[in-house]
Length: 89
Figure 1 (tube, rainbow, N blue to C red):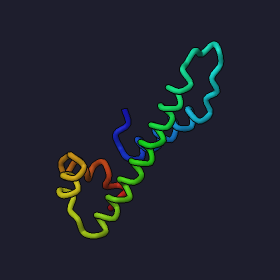
Figure 2 (cartoon, rainbow, N blue to C red):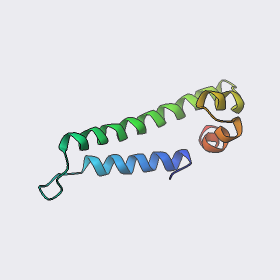
Figure 3 (cartoon, rainbow, N blue to C red):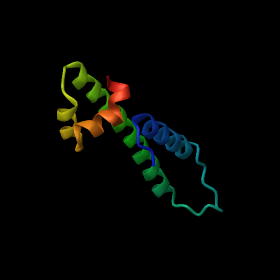
């Protein structure tokens, strides 16, 4: 499972591309509505991760500590720094 922001975004982009390029066939026997829902959810998750990173960048630029950011994202400050620090420092 991806752990870093870059890994999460790359994984989400790969999944979104896979779903976007998916063409169902009779042999697949997948529900087209379910596939559409999955594709949309993956795209939404990718957009949400990008939005979160932008918000963290703005918070860091405004001088917010990693401890405060960690509380907002539901983790410790150190865990937030490790996950987002390379992109938000």
